[in-house]
Length: 497
Image (cartoon, rainbow, N blue to C red; front, side, top):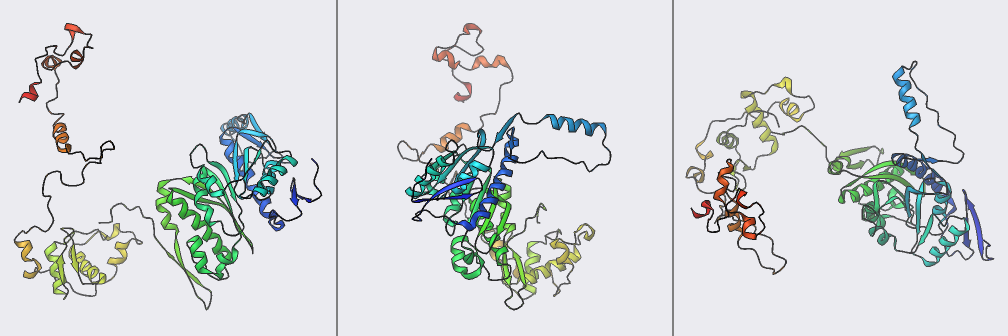
């Protein structure tokens, strides 16, 4: 393929890319290390993922790996296991430049000249397809030309779409990409929502942020608007910038009940490159709050302190210092003796409302525990109960029941909670789609289904008391041998009661 006089050939890695002299398509030569690293990470990702699909990737120039046993002696079982593992080599291999039907589906959302995608096709084994997308029509045309120039048009397809819309359309489980690469000019924040939805289960998400100044503390307000975090201008700004982008990805993934597992993160003065794998796991997503924290940085000495947003616990019931609950009147009396106001709650019959501080409440409970002791030897030294009970109370609680501890409404058994005005009170059935009216026979259906399983028949001879439904429909083929009655005038005895 011949080049035009107004084109320049740039060689990087194994790729030779055509660029127009008019600089109509963006190219950044200082990102070569970024692209080198991406090719290496995707190659290792392909090795790991395709091994699960029974495919072995073949990397050019790579020698066979030698596994060294750390054990001084190997028994017969170990030898047999090694022989078994050695015999289980996948029969299918995938080499660079070859299309693999079980291989990776890769999307480069903002491809520009297509340099990164061409390098994928020439340097990464085990690919099924590479989609190089760019919103610019001139860029998309150049991508197609570079694919043909490098002889990889059987793997690489050019696309001229809005990157976010393209990814949103690929949210179906069978349409998601195994690898999504985003290398925008500036912030990737506008593409992250679509990316975490369009990457497959256990897929690889590669994201570059070139707005390092924003993420390193120069503009905290802008950082918050884009990534949901306020950056701090400190000596560890680059490390914090990495965590800001990971936090942003994690929050967006949590919305769709997916979680982010960082694979590799690299930060330089002018860009950040993160590689993460995306998984589905509701339990992990729900616990993501325990990974978040606020950072307090000292402007004087530069020291910082982390305040965690939450902590995951699995201690079962949290009923806190594990002692007997004091009776309601005695607890109310203790608050009144201490000079505080107290009243019952309208929301819960066992709850109270008071102007006493939490420290006073715990002091009362400490005093109560002294007369109703718990087994201290069973308490963990890191548990809240141990720390609360290790402190002496600041007041001497009096649990003698006072007359005003029991209000008149409680003595007279007045209704404090709203009662249902009629049976089956509450939300009604969903409106029918046909007529739009609300079903009013809900109570009739419930009455019909009540006691349905009472007085079940255990003797087959009793079935003759019930009419045969198939006989009424004219489809019964058993005749006189049918265990049900063919008497059309007979009715169900239960219905006549």
